[in-house]
Image (tube, rainbow, N blue to C red; front, side, top):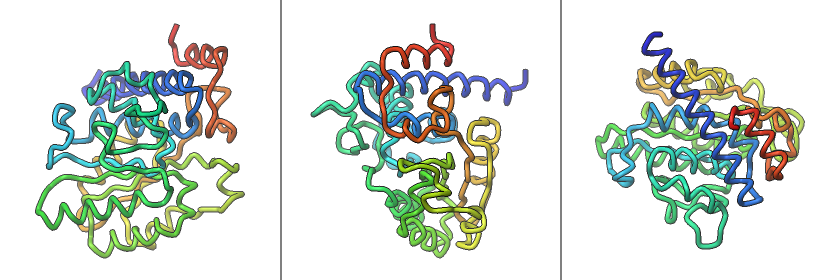
Length: 276
């Protein structure tokens, strides 16, 4: 097995554990958003366990890479990666959505170690990322900024205002990743507000654009590497994903946008993920 194949296998195993953590914490809270958390699991895992330059023992390290989960309702996947990466104990995941807990229903950077931005009001994450990336350029820092967007939130006009600004300032230290699972809370994206041709839209805003299978770790790694090597322009990675990926009865079902599994459903989901 080559080093690259070994890396992919290790990240796939990590992503499987992240999915298990996501389901357990939402079940414990009896509330949360499994669909969009599972669709983003391979992407966020690859960022936190390979791509990002971070230090869990020094969460506010000034030279760290930044990550923004613009679709903040999918925070269980972010919390699971932060815990497994060592920012706080894994046992804390069982306290999701508790009043006065550190893991709120939407990310709160004042409560959770490792969060770079409070999010939840959709459409604002890319604007925050533009500000961080531009600030890094002005301060002559070499950190990079990654923003994960939901496809449904691309309906928000502020996303495209930020896209224009990122190209104007040639923010090649900024990467937007679209979790393109084609479902949002009200149903299929194509029925709510069609996005295609999505790649052409980002290209028209002068972004370097890549399209990948968002569940293929090797493709995610190559896209992130190409983004790092791209000068003068921000990169958008359109990641084609499946809402609820990994759990058969959740896949491609809008109702699992924001619903907790009951005891039997959790047992079935964990079995499908290989947990006895």
